[in-house]
Length: 295
Image (cartoon, rainbow, N blue to C red; front, top):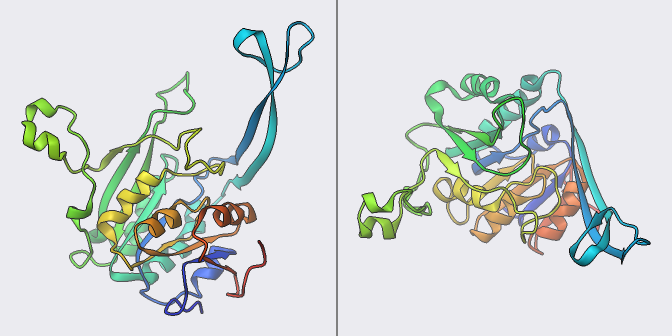
């Protein structure tokens, strides 16, 4: 059993199905997960740097820049993991049951998905939590990435929100950062200055390619999206759990907001990304709860 009463913030390297069983009942005010989306392939992300390779006819390189200078791209890193499940609901169900066990009575679960599996997962969550405990379907809309030529471009994710016990759940609306009105002239200067509360459709860009948040992890989510998740549904000092932690965004945001966190991931590349990103006092454990070797 991982003792949260005496633990600092924790990253656990291991299969979350095994790790979750070692966590105590009703310990977490908020659980956020961003599981694999079941795309049917692999999720890959390469990191590149561009190096000048001369100019003129003798130059090499694979692209041309200002003044005819030639540049070549060098791969500096690659991250990859499989994203194919024959029984996706069967994979998630025991983990979602554990999530419910681990939530406090006032706790909230956020499950981040896309259009491939969100409807199946909602039926599954209705069975595990009860339909009365469904709180929201949040749409995160963005405007970058690939453009399909044979269909409408898919530019949104779905975040399903369930509570442990409806009516007892924490939702502190006053803690949510306000956003600008789309038509400020319709509401008057005072309201326009204050801004409005976001709805269940969140317009927020992806992690910028050259942004300071960028880690290179294939499925990294923006810190702004996680701040909006944590603001109303947790308080300073609360424990937050993410058992598909990936690049560690949940932990980075939780630490910045005064929350405590447990992150779990079985990908060693994810753990190394988190080591470089998370606060120095973070504890790293293996699946058995022992110290995890590493720098």
